[in-house]
Amino acid sequence: MPTYAYRCSVCGHSFDVHQSFSDAALTQCPQCAGLLRKVFSTPAVTFKGSGFYLNDSKSGSSTAS
Image (cartoon, rainbow, N blue to C red):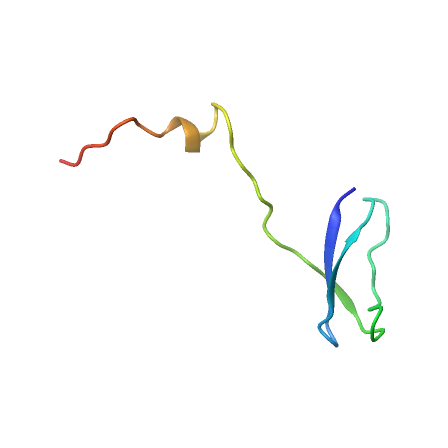
């Protein structure tokens, strides 16, 4: 189940919630009843193995000419 981060636009309270994809987004702050917004962040992605430019483009030694 994915974890979603929310932040209240009124009081600034932020928290994380485990929700199913089919669950409706939360809209009301549990502290002040203000408007909640989802906080989007960059995912932590690691490219391992061959087939990725990041891994395949590295050379053993580099020389500057």
